[in-house]
Length: 201
Ligand SMILES: [Mg+2]
Image 1 (cartoon, rainbow, N blue to C red):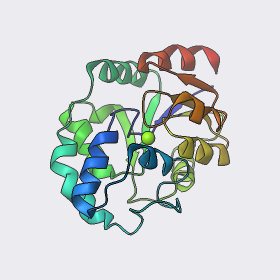
Image 2 (image 1 turned 90 degrees about the vertical axis):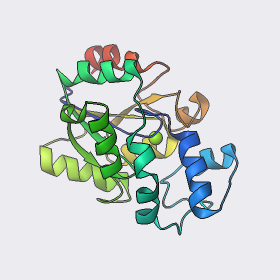
Image 3 (image 1 turned 45 degrees about the vertical axis):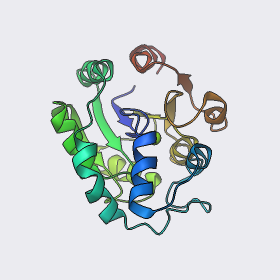
Image 4 (image 1 turned 120 degrees about the vertical axis):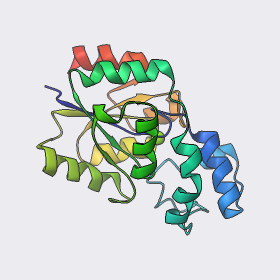
């Protein structure tokens, strides 16, 4: 019985692919192709051997992007679905990004209260560890929560803790790439989350 839904942020709640690619270029001076940027999300972003951003000053970067990231406007449809889901499930976010920036984004979009907690890179760089924090703190386990993400790297991390993933193919990674992680299901519209979670778990 599903009690909680754990969301990834980038590429799921907000499509930040071009935003981060552009901001990382401004901040680090490195410009990488869209394909390379996709590739470094095949595993944990902070551990990928081809990640030219590995030595970035992340504390500096998240401060640099804070004004613009927190001011991004959420899509109406996504906002409505999240509100709907929050009536039945506890909602969490675990992100490789900055929890403060994401919390301020949620606040500016009027939905901070529907999330129980947001964990970012401040907590742990590994999502495996972030899952474990939520398990311990909220009594969650692999069979009472589900993870929603847009990247293969995230699916592989969820697999390590036995959490089923519903993957979305409108974010950073294509359906073909997501399939390699064997998610429970791949969806193409944000509102498909509701029937999938309501009926199949
Ligand atoms: Mg993502």
